[in-house]
Image (tube, rainbow, N blue to C red; front, side, top):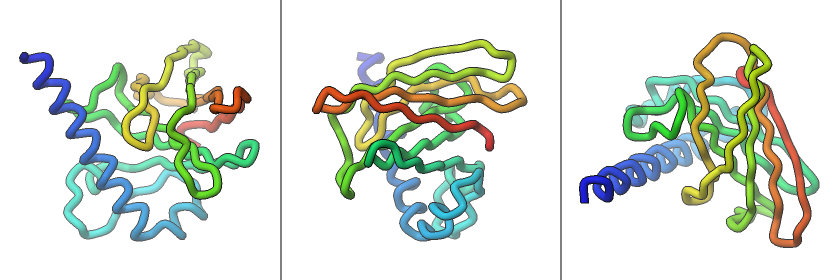
Length: 159
């Protein structure tokens, strides 16, 4: 029962963070989507977690899909195996793709490689990685859509 309560609390915390992130993206989406860089949330809406940390959001076009790479520091309630959570959203024609299978790979600055399957959380797919050490990390995904086709994309964190 304690495990169920902890899992439920983590899911609710994640949903709240995503809701705040979505609210923030809607307020200044033009500036954020045009810069596609590491940015700081400075709106005055009282979003505790989002106002206190930097946010990374990069969007890529891949084979007609819009892929959003979102990295944020993990909180105590949202710790999924690393210092940061890698979150991916895939859209096509304005619709979120909810049935993709996504694998992720991180190449750390010391050339160590890690792979993880991303889990579904609302409109996002996510998992945790330790991105706390200095240097640039290469974040890559390979996703398979319902039509059986495979697509790949990648970014560097931080840029």
